[in-house]
Length: 360
Length: 279
Image (cartoon, rainbow over all chains, first blue to last red; front, side):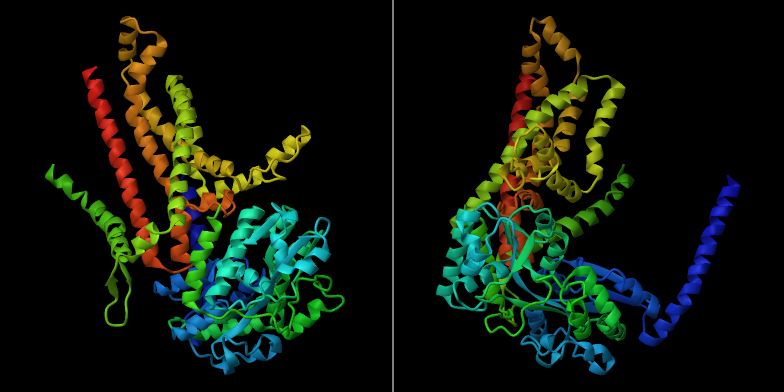
């Protein structure tokens, strides 16, 4: 028994010594950045397989990751006083964080890889000149449909209103988010998705209530990926990046973005003012923008890369997304809009949204 | 004895920080709204008015209570015979049954609920089996049935264990006495066993009804989101619309309803006890 104990202790000692050797590298990191730990707060299932391990190895640091599944959840956590080094919020949330004065103005000399970015994702309305944010992934919202059961002609003539076509009742997934659902309704009615007009919002509310009562929809969020890959239903509102993943996994599925316009979004990396380790945060952002890391990200996750070279390579004829109609978001289309941050509007929509879902 | 009382201090400190302070914060939030720069809180009853003046919120409240009551009833109907059977079995068999009932609770509730999605799906286990028998896929996921099933599945161990405990504590000579006095098996169950196990049923009801009425992820996952319950509304107030004040007000309303129902069940319990005392 004693022998066993001793050997266990010896092993433990050796392991701790070995890891001690490893930490000489992290000592360098401490000297260079002030700390060897980066706190990252990102969306779930939103990173390349080797993104974190690659960064940790290259810079001899340790990354602590936490995940969120909505911008609001991230914002709530941030407001409770939690500190992170890098966040990846969406456009409108960045707008709010900027107006809250909680983001660091970026020192772009520390992010030389910013030159790799595609012009299409730079200088977007929520952060002109990219003073505070660096694009991470971008995309739009469209309809994933089962090519065997849905007539493309119906999609082309009805657009988002196909979600109200009783021919497909009981066969649709709606996305359980007030902004995306109201966006669909407003676009289908021909309004802007950032409208504050009472009448237009009410019309959209009625549109959604009618959908809820006549179509027997199922409201889902991330589960939609599994459900549509399994061919659960015929129509689903899906983000383009998720759609490209579904299309890869199930050949029967197609992706359609209606002509009446949709929402273009961009999730970007930011450094909050209360970050404990901004120097390492810059290093991480720069690392994500490198060709290899961007490629790893987009290949694993399926969302459109902001890296111009990667974007060109994966959509080129022999690229892995060459035949994927969902991967590359529609660019420069006048009716496609980015969400603007409007807290009162959002609260109002959230309240209406609960009422829509409870209306049966 | 007095020295031992000191041992409760950690518990008292714990309960103050973790339960009393948050409860007070909820009350504070419920009766206020976001103020301006000078005063952080403005006293208001607006949040309550908003809740009670909107039929949709009341409908959601009613639906939540209904689902919770249905769940509780099903739990009693399945749980009582199960507990009765277990309490009548032999000692080592008993332990095995209790273990079987507790094992699922070692796994996280969320994971267990996700598993039901795979079981109930249109191309899930049950439907594949039905398909083999030539019965077309029956839609089970995202229905009322799935929600109640998920809740019963998750909460029934609490019911069974409570009833089981009260049944095993029972003095068996009472039943013998009943049959000596000429009662048949059914009568002695109805007049002796059932009343004596009532405290177990009542604490079982409390343990099933409370989580059922406030659950939000079971209706979300198994009900497909269109099944809005009061827990969902509270969650969305905090996480999506960011209206902590209104969210707190709904939580407070729920807390009052729950406390009232607990008070009432206790009263029933006491009434029954004094009755059996007379017996």
